[in-house]
Image 1 (cartoon, rainbow, N blue to C red):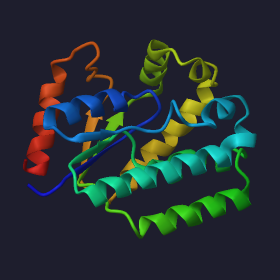
Image 2 (cartoon, rainbow, N blue to C red):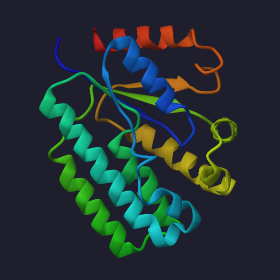
Image 3 (cartoon, one colour):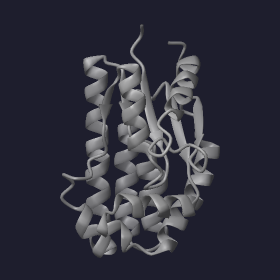
Length: 205
């Protein structure tokens, strides 16, 4: 079987990591996670977004690029719990549009992103976890990260708006959409079986 790459996409708290872990386990794919716990800028960012926005996004971008290249070099089947495309199209853009990242920083960031796009393999499938803001907030409260709980609701809504626009324009791979208002494998673990079967059919594995 040719090596396959699956990436997950969706708003903070949508359930991407939980789904990616379950899908990777069932398929026997190696799972790569977003750098959250060990990100040296994340907690500072939530308390002072304007000061730390560029640092945070640059760290995420470089980390994401490096793990994609690792999977390519090792020629392994891989699942990523967030796509690199969201870094630029959603998070960095939102920070720029809301005045938390300056024009010079944003343009530099986009230049780095576009340069990286020339050297990565695009995924075989993007799994989009579509979650409305109410679902996002419910799941954020459930996992209980204090820094996320203190973020204004307007921030999550701004991200949601960008996601709706972005997913309509995404064309790097097939898209498989999961409705997070109906699929919650924490509460209903058996739902993962249908998800995995659908992914198998799409990828032909």
